Image (cartoon, rainbow over all chains, first blue to last red; front, side, top):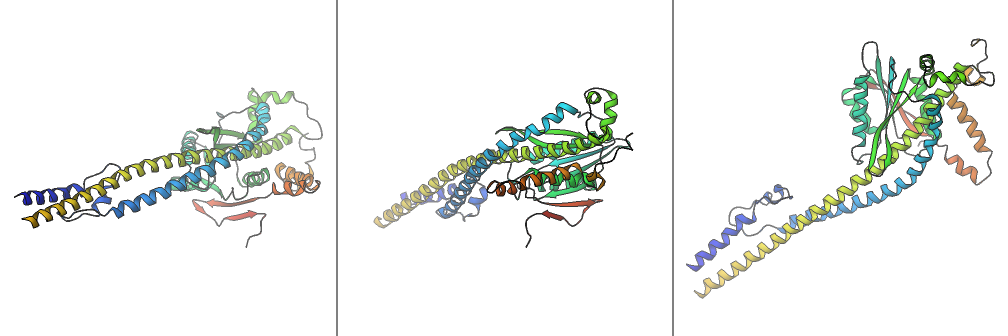
Amino acid sequence: MAMAALRREGRRFAPLLSPRPIAGVRSSLVSEEDAPFGTRSISTQVVRNRMKSVRNIQKITKAMKMVAASKLRAIQVRAENSRGLWQPFTALLGDTPSVDVKKNVIVTISSDKGLCGGINSTSVKISKALHKLSSGPEKETKYVVLGEKAKAQLVRDSKKDILLTISELQKNPLNYTQVSVLADDILKNVEFDALRIIFNKFHSVVSFLPTMSTILSPEIVEREAEAGGKLGELDSYEIEGGETKAEILQNLAEFQFSCVLFNAVLENATSEQGARMSAMDSSSRNAGEMLDRLTLTYNRTRQASITTELIEIISGASALEG
Amino acid sequence: MASNAAVPFWRAAGMTYITYSNICANLVRNCLKEPYKAEALTREKVHFSISTWNDGKPEKPVLRSDTLED
């Protein structure tokens, strides 16, 4: 009688051990072990293996966070110093994002490597929105894509509008010469009335805002100058040397593009490191939480199996006694 | 008036202002003494891979690099 009750007790534990959905741990973990009704314990081996791999992942993401933090420090200084390159241009020529032109070329800057949070998606989202905004009758909008991540996203639905894609930009530390050669290539291969550069501007470690910079071609600058405003004041400057205003404007436009692109690439790289840092940080935190939950499961499983063993022993012993 | 003015020699040769200023910068960097010269020349390395797209299809990417490819 007592034996039967005890045996029943033993069996009652088994269904409790097997597939009870335990929060956080995928139920497949436990159901892999889907023991036939009546067996005694789950192997704790599976839980232990999973804990080991989660622990390794946590270490890796912590290391990546440290690496990103150190890279961030270095490149943030350079990005902030490079801001001085385009400020005189904005002071001279103004920034006119709302200019209405026929040929827009959108230069989207993104990273080559992943695991950096959502910055690439926001850049692509803004580029697509801009594309939509600036399309209309007789207007044409094309893309120049820097970086693998944006290319992968834009290829999906805007294949026909891509003019150039550039990658492997960060193999050597970023420098002005490289970006200016790139700017030169873009200028030579692309016809544009206005260039819109989209990048993530670095404000702080947790805040990177997608920003757009506009560069006008010299002809459009002429056109806008007639309309007045900042550009209209260009005529009040005296031109020295043997150059004409048109030539100077062309030189300025090219140089402006190169400087703004340099700053944009640096800011985007800084934002990338910052985003990676916070992504890896939240990833290690999640791994830590998962590890806690797994530890609880592991202990519960272990204790349950010990209890089952004890019950077996006791019921066996009592069966012997009679 | 604009058409009579001589275009600067570098623009007549097909260079943009950017190329012109890069060449000038290179000349200035080469005027430095060692060890600053080696440091400055590391800031001139170019490496990227660019590929033009025609009608939705990428062409073979062109690698522009100062480093030797093997």
